[in-house]
Amino acid sequence: AQSVAQPEDQVNVAEGNPLTVKCTYSVSGNPYLFWYVQYPNRGLQFLLKYITGDNLVKGSYGFEAEFNKSQTSFHLKKPSALVSDSALYFCAVRERAGNNRKLIWGLGTSLAVNP
Amino acid sequence: SAVISQKPSRDICQRGTSLTIQCQVDSQVTMMFWYRQQPGQSLTLIATANQGSEATYESGFVIDKFPISRPNLTFSTLTVSNMSPEDSSIYLCSVTEAEAFFGQGTRLTVV
Image (tube, rainbow over all chains, first blue to last red; front, side, top):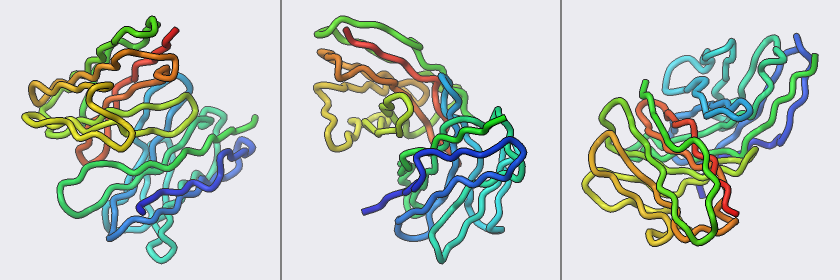
């Protein structure tokens, strides 16, 4: 079955330290890969995506993610965390073939950045 | 990018009643998606709404409980019918171009 795993329910980092939010997937073919962020009491916002090309993709708010095909991973990273990065982060994938635009979602990781 | 207007933003409803949630997109899109999300948890897809055809429902969701309309390429509604407290949740509409865009959500509380 197709699935997305975010192995950590919560990640805690100190402000200024690097952060990593992990994502692995089990989807046939070479899917499109996405990260979304949800701030408290706000809607979901797109952060970044991997379609093709360079394995390191850069997105909004200084975030980046590294695609690793052999490990089927797409970990979200930021070199220096801010308290304002505290939010709920979702990894999602979509099949590349056909016109299927349905996303498969991870369960989310709550990021807490401590001052 | 698509801009999605969703309303109402929140509502408190009596059990046994129905609520219709509206979703308006600023561009024409083929597919619209309706999700349910418990606060702090992941998204659960309810159905995919296609213009000109019946909506496609995910396992565990049925048309009688969650009827969907899709009268044109920019608009859709989701009705939560015969509500019970278990239907209390956040309901989100979404469209996918290269990436997905979301409405701000409808926070529904059933009492």
